[in-house]
Image 1 (cartoon, rainbow, N blue to C red):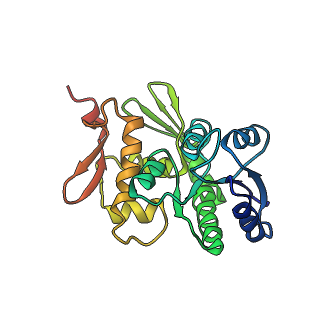
Image 2 (cartoon, one colour):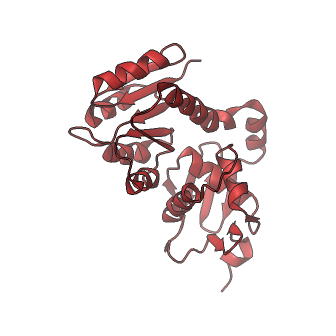
Length: 240
């Protein structure tokens, strides 16, 4: 079944260029501002969004925040804003990838394909059977629902992006185990690790904001200096 890609950019030339490369493989929807994009989300089934930052009415960061409140679908930010702070902001708000203009359309297509594989690969039959054996994982006040890919904290639902779900599933499946940055990156992103510490740190920070009462003093997701990260064991969470 063909996936649906939403392109959001106020430059019609960029949208048309990307459509030329995407329409052979995907169904493509387009919007030229954030408000129109939200309207499309309300009436269409979208599998991945490619969004610009600088747009009228509702900019890309605001649109990204809205998407993350309602969906875990992969989002790629494509922007002329190439400062490191913009990339960190985009990733921190929930973007799965960040591409700087000018770009190669073929690179954008390749990154879209990669995100779709990573996001929807857990729906393959082998993994579905595994999920059926364990529909949820509980640790402390956290419950990770594997069927809905949703987190519950003290019974309150918390939406997760695809990478956040994979990251939390990795840690909660083996509490107490120390994962190196290389193990984390290659497990969650399915790519070779080339010392991409910033991506991991941003994702860890985003996840702590969702699961910890005090992200600066984490109880669940702990840093092991010089080694990596680990999730607290059950007995640690119930210690006096």
